[in-house]
Image (cartoon, rainbow, N blue to C red; front, top):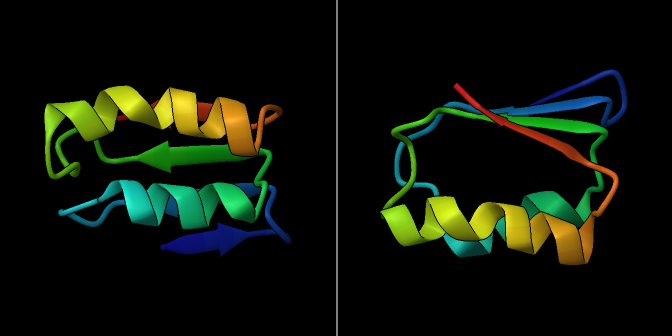
Length: 65
Protein backbone atom coordinates (compact mmCIF):
# COMPACT_ATOMS: atom_id res chain seq x y z
CA UNK A 1 0.00 0.00 0.00
CA UNK A 2 1.40 3.36 -1.03
CA UNK A 3 0.06 6.82 -0.23
CA UNK A 4 1.18 9.80 -2.31
CA UNK A 5 0.83 13.48 -1.40
CA UNK A 6 -1.35 13.20 1.71
CA UNK A 7 -4.02 10.87 0.33
CA UNK A 8 -4.11 12.39 -3.16
CA UNK A 9 -3.38 8.88 -4.42
CA UNK A 10 -3.49 5.47 -2.76
CA UNK A 11 -2.05 2.55 -4.69
CA UNK A 12 -2.41 -1.09 -3.73
CA UNK A 13 -0.66 -3.62 -5.96
CA UNK A 14 -0.67 -6.44 -3.40
CA UNK A 15 -2.31 -9.78 -4.03
CA UNK A 16 -4.98 -11.04 -1.67
CA UNK A 17 -6.91 -7.76 -1.28
CA UNK A 18 -9.90 -8.38 1.01
CA UNK A 19 -13.05 -6.38 1.80
CA UNK A 20 -11.55 -5.52 5.19
CA UNK A 21 -8.52 -3.94 3.52
CA UNK A 22 -10.74 -2.05 1.07
CA UNK A 23 -12.85 -0.68 3.96
CA UNK A 24 -9.72 0.40 5.84
CA UNK A 25 -8.40 2.11 2.72
CA UNK A 26 -11.73 3.84 2.08
CA UNK A 27 -11.58 5.20 5.63
CA UNK A 28 -8.55 7.29 4.59
CA UNK A 29 -10.76 8.98 1.95
CA UNK A 30 -8.12 9.25 -0.80
CA UNK A 31 -8.87 11.36 -3.88
CA UNK A 32 -7.85 8.45 -6.13
CA UNK A 33 -7.16 4.78 -5.51
CA UNK A 34 -5.55 2.25 -7.84
CA UNK A 35 -5.67 -1.53 -7.44
CA UNK A 36 -3.98 -4.34 -9.34
CA UNK A 37 -6.71 -5.93 -11.45
CA UNK A 38 -5.91 -9.49 -10.39
CA UNK A 39 -5.01 -8.61 -6.79
CA UNK A 40 -8.40 -9.31 -5.23
CA UNK A 41 -9.06 -12.53 -3.30
CA UNK A 42 -12.25 -13.08 -5.32
CA UNK A 43 -14.37 -11.58 -8.07
CA UNK A 44 -16.97 -10.70 -5.43
CA UNK A 45 -14.49 -8.45 -3.60
CA UNK A 46 -13.52 -6.77 -6.87
CA UNK A 47 -17.19 -6.09 -7.62
CA UNK A 48 -17.85 -4.77 -4.10
CA UNK A 49 -15.00 -2.24 -4.16
CA UNK A 50 -17.12 0.44 -5.85
CA UNK A 51 -19.99 -0.12 -3.42
CA UNK A 52 -17.69 0.13 -0.40
CA UNK A 53 -16.10 3.35 -1.62
CA UNK A 54 -19.49 4.79 -2.57
CA UNK A 55 -20.58 4.36 1.06
CA UNK A 56 -17.37 5.28 2.90
CA UNK A 57 -15.57 7.66 0.53
CA UNK A 58 -17.90 8.74 -2.29
CA UNK A 59 -15.51 11.33 -3.77
CA UNK A 60 -12.76 8.77 -4.45
CA UNK A 61 -11.92 7.95 -8.08
CA UNK A 62 -11.31 4.17 -8.34
CA UNK A 63 -9.14 2.47 -10.96
CA UNK A 64 -8.08 -1.13 -11.47
CA UNK A 65 -5.12 -1.79 -13.75
